[in-house]
Image (cartoon, rainbow, N blue to C red; front, top):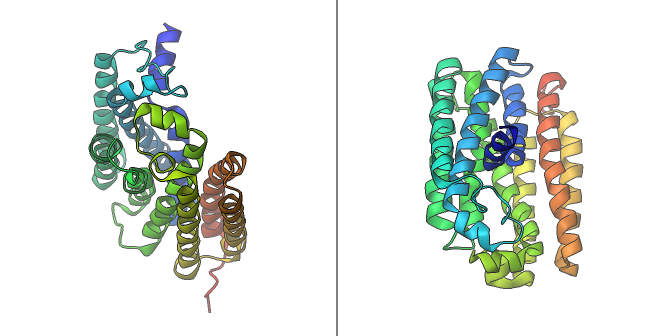
Length: 295
């Protein structure tokens, strides 16, 4: 029984869910300029977890043929048929409906619609529409992973997204996503080729991939600077965020020069820590700091 439950949990890709929730809670704290309330946090995170689990399960269902051809994904329950297509479909649909109903009932309708829109975008636009057709799928499809920021913000504001700050936080995740995944794709280039996925290192080679990683890294830096300038932040965010992003740029430049897998993985691992730290310091700053431009 426990083994069966574990397999179904793995279908929801819990490690990816953790990363999504790392952006949701800080966005809520920034929106509230402090702690938004324990019940609201719990309700939003539960609903977000259900919705993200739904998207990941449906993604695993659609991609099970590709996963079988790739060494790093061949052991997934859906690829190895330890969880069948019907069970995966039911799990994905139930989690999606439950996530919408939970958020609509305990948070608000806008948060519920945002979370569900992310599921639909991830499954239909990214997984079914783009993933097997273009190397830019990570860029456009990555928007689904940015929506938890808006969901968390809407949960606190009663559904309002009129403030510029949630959109700047959204943009940080959006421009973070391509270099993060392309760095990993460099290591698994042959695996993606075997799976028939047109990841950038497969379609355009390592040199072009490192060029694109560097370009998107500067786009990320520009958005962080915009957030510093227009997000009403204090020194507690501005200084560490600038330092963290400059370090990112140094790693991206190093990768551009060396074009090695070791430097790609160095950037990949740093990028995971980077996103968590950026959002944590944004939350801490919003709760305790004086804005840079305060009179």
